[in-house]
Structures are given as structure tokens and as C-alpha cells.
Image (cartoon, rainbow, N blue to C red; front, top):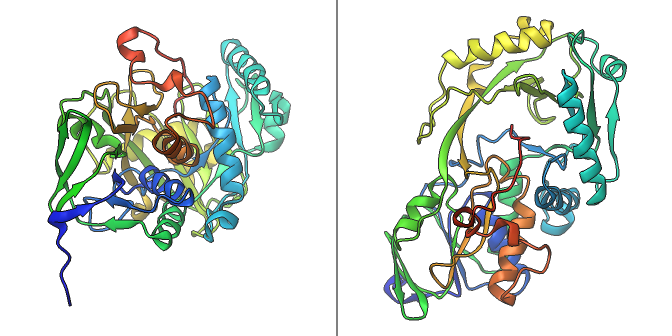
Length: 396
């Protein structure tokens, strides 16, 4: 058997990070005929970063035009995922129900709905407190004033989407290097020239930074500052609750951000409980804190009393990392500081749901020199220095 000489490897594109975003970029490049692509993943298998622990929600109920448009494209793509890739995405259009408990919350949902309709989300609806009580009679609703609901929001399999993108890309000729770390990026007068890895060097003129919460570390290899900070998010998994249906939507209590959903149809019956703990500090913390269970159970019991009887499934509890930017929006585009370095970073918890749009946009930037699908000027890395931050308070 001949051992390849990786010191002489060349590729049109090197993708750093084999999670769902990197996999989508590779897929979209390959679909366009660009198969001289190497995806470099530092772990021994994919999905050990942010993709695997993700809640698996997809929604178009956002408060900024670019997030709405990214979601509309992505959800439509996911609804036809098996047709496109030959693999199942696990899409369940169970809906997202935002529950308002103040006049301010309800006014916010109304203004968001107007914006969502303006940008093409036709089926989002305002619901009354009575409607919500009928949808979820087990919920304490004495302080509920209304909400919003969108049926095409719902759930997906993050790992299923990642694998579908990856396997189809590899069928087209893309290479996936597992257990391989990027140790350096060489540049010359024309920009990116070579990627150094623990497996060897790859000559290339295009590098995609899809390293998730580790994006800033990749940027620093070439002196490019990327404002992405890791922040732990934790999920408590429970076994089934007799009083609660396994076909509920994602339910979001706007009082404090507590939200819950049924576990995937392919899993054992039960629920996933989540809450953006405001005391959480930034850092690469991927361990699940058992003390978080009591915190979230108290909130769950206050809103849905029957959840107090839910038995925690310790094996399903997990922690993952959000890759946060200062305005909770992604950074997509070629780095203004280095030609050939393409950024797909900072999704702030929305990487799985926006991966189809991201992959297509980045492939267009590389192959066409400009994004065609959407105007991504709002997501440019230059917005932070220019003070053009976007507004998206609907962070879960």
C-alpha cells in the first residue's frame, strides 16, 4: 500500500471544522463541482463540538431580517433534505410557541410578526391566552397574555443533517480528515497560501473557518481577530410525563427564557428542558453541571407543574457551547484582513438551523466571488468596528 505524501497535498478549499456548518460548506461546494476540498476535523469523529449537544430546534420566528431570511431558506432546504442528500434530517414541523407574560412581550411578538410577514414568513400567527391554554392545558396560564406560533418551525436531527451533508460531499470526492488539528496557516502577498496540520501541509488559496466556538483561535493563527466567545448552554433530559403529550411544540416562556420540547420521535419518550442561565460565564466549559438540574426544574415546575414529577434521564443531560458574537448574529464573509480566509462563525446558538443557508452562501463567495442567495452585508465582520451591530433579543 502506498502512503500518500501529505507534504505535497493541494486543495482548492480547506474547511476547518467538521461540524454541521463545515459539512454544509463542503456539500455545497461539491454540488457546484468543486470537489478538491479537504475538511479538517480535530476530533476522532464529527459532532463532538457544538453540533452533537444541540437542542435541534429550527425556527423562522426571529427579530432581524437576515435571521428570518436565513431561516426561511434553511427550513425549506431541510424539508427536502432527503431528496437533496439521500439522508434524513429528522424534520418535525411541530412548531414554536412563544408565550408572552406581559404587555411588553406581546407588543414585541406583534412587531416581530409584522417583520416576519414582510420578509416572507406567511404562516406565523398571534394566539390568545385562551388559545395557549387549549394547546397546553397543563401550563400555568394565569399571567399569560398571548403569544405567537408558527407551525413550520420545529425540530431536526443535528447529527443527521451533519452526516447527510458530509456523506454526500464525500461521495462527490471531498476528503474528511479526522483526528487532525490545524496548527498554522501560511500566507503570502496574495493571501492564504497553505494550511499546516498534524497530518501534513495542504497548499490552498481558500480556507473556511468553520471552527465553531474555537473560531477565534483559528483566526489568531494568522493574526485575525474574530469576536467569538464560547458560552456554555445546558440541557436537562427527562423521561416521559403521563400528563404531557409527546407532540407538543417548542414552548418558550418569555418571562425568563425557559423552554422545553419533546424529545425526538426516534428517541424514548420524554422532554428536553433548557434555560439561558444568566449567571453562566464565558469559557470552554463542556461538562454538565448537576446543579443546573435543580435550577431548571424550579422554573419548569413554576410554568408547567406536572413537570415536577418528571424523572431526569441523566444519560441525556448534556452541555454544549454557543459561539457568541457581540450582537448574537453570525459572521459570514471573506475576512477583510486576509484574502482567502472565509468566515462562517458566531451563530450564537443558530448554527444547525442556519447551516443550509450558510453553506450555500460561503460556496457562492468562494466560487462566484459574491453571495447570490442573500445580501449578507449585515453579517460582515466589519460591522463591529463600525458600530453597526444588529438587534436580536430572541436568543434562546
